[in-house]
Length: 316
Image 1 (cartoon, rainbow, N blue to C red):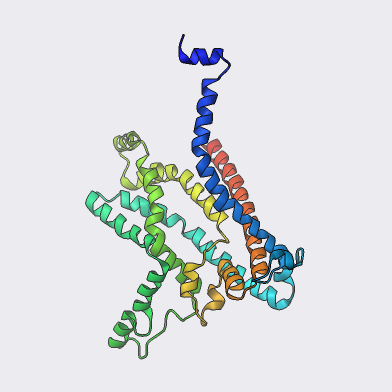
Image 2: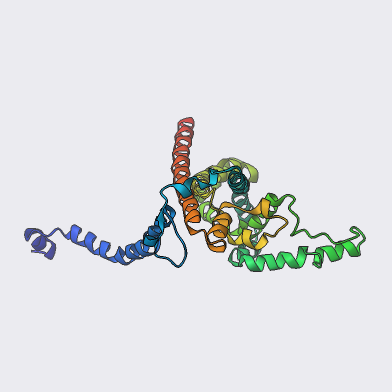
């Protein structure tokens, strides 16, 4: 009689025992997720009190939903919050439109016949993703400041009479942020599409070659349709982050001249909470942000499923 049969006879299910062992292997990961992702959510309690730094939360006045309604309390706060939301949604809407660029960049890379040149281009466009935004700002400062390379070149050629401070200008601020974002993340964003392209069955392309399909026909009828599911996944993730811009990019590029056009929601929370010390108000805004993000993720997921079903019906 085998060991498994003996265990089964003794009332021990080998599969259940193996599954329990696998669960034990994941326990450290689950504990880490709980400690670093869910335990900090206890800090949401600050949103319901008039918290003063240095005091215990239980020594502060309970305010209920006061801080959640604060952005709409008067015309000044409504104007500030409206401006911040306009910047946040406007910049992220441009990001959504530009999401298709990494996909086409990946297609462009895979169409390069020379593997050495392809790898060189991919490496050079991926490296900026790992550069700190502080260093990115330093690089653009050396190029675009009044003493930068571009101004020295244009003034020296007689195109400009006086240097222009491009970094301090508030004109086209959303497009500038999009440009910095693409410069830093285009190559990195293309990696997932490159992986999807390499997973396409080569026999499909060989059959297309036999049928006389050209390069653009194969891209249109084979490559792009196979990349659409990946694009939808990335689109859903970006929808969930439509009000999550982060802080670092906007903090380093912000100044007194462009602040009204660059202050996004995360930067607004940072300045209210850590700079001005209004922890309770900043926490309440952060909670609003999390709730809205969850709603957007579930909504985008439902929409993508409907679109996927509709496309399947059309194919049938």
